[in-house]
Amino acid sequence: MINNPPLKIGIASGKGGTGKTLLSTNLAAYLSQTQPTLLVDLDVEEPDDFLFVRGTTQSITDQYKMIPVWDEKACTLCGICSKTCKFHAVIQLGSIILVFKELCHSCYACSELCPAEALPMQKHKMGEIKTIISGNLTFIESRLNIGEEQAVPLIHQTHELAEKTHGNIPLQIFDCPPGTSCPVVASTRNVDFVVLVTEPTPFGLNDLKLAVETMKEIHKPVGVVINRYGIGNNEVEMYCQEAGIPVLAKIPYDRRIAELYSNGQLVYDKIEDMQTSLDNIIKAIQNVVRKN
Ligand code: SF4
Ligand code: SF4
Image (cartoon, rainbow, N blue to C red):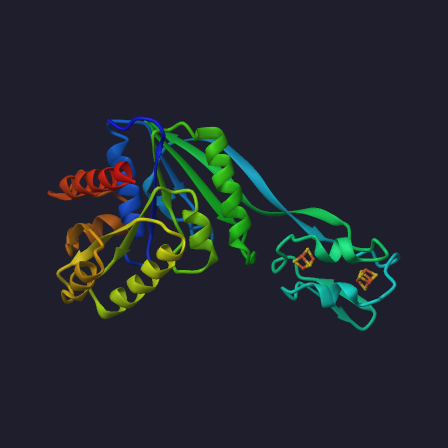
């Protein structure tokens, strides 16, 4: 049984389509059979854990960021704002100032440096966070509006909301965006351990190495789950052995898993050995986190 403080696990991968959703949803659903568990889908641009979690919606909250809005009458066309914004979110086109709200990082620089106070900051809806309850499982889904390009502010807000509303749940699983850029760093900033899901192929190995380097830079302990084990070669295992990275589980390539997954069904209660793999993963993580 897991005691306080909560154990926070990030599930990440160097690229999409490796089995991150499969592992996140099945681990959360399985563990929630015996203890309160929180699953947070932080893959805000393409959240899909909801396909596997059925429950009652507890809340939906709109999420906002602050963006500058041009006041044409006050503007003197001095050009300071377009020179200030390092994200190219505000540009001057002749006698017009254009703000690209999707690119804005809400840094306030242009607004504060505008000598005419012609760029006041205003709220802009960028997405929403939904909370669903399914027995012992609390599921939080964070979804960025289509066209929005800044995932990080919404990921930060989701972490804050999860901590504020369900921070005492003893086991917390964060399904992180794929890749190695800012969103995955923002997603894993609060977790105790990161599970990197990969597949035993040259592409899988390449992306795994990049993900391991990213996690090293932010000093997160990692373990690897090899999904679709048996389809490729053993280079991922050899790499993990040489790098001293524990392989927490190998989920075999199994047509039945693919079929269940594509039908929106969990597999932990239908595929033999899956529960053993999930138990091994959680025990290995607990051992590493307890030692740190
Ligand atoms: S800094 Fe202010 S006054 Fe200058 S061009 Fe931009 S909006 Fe207009
Ligand atoms: S608030 Fe910051 S990021 Fe947004 S437009 Fe202004 S300078 Fe650019």
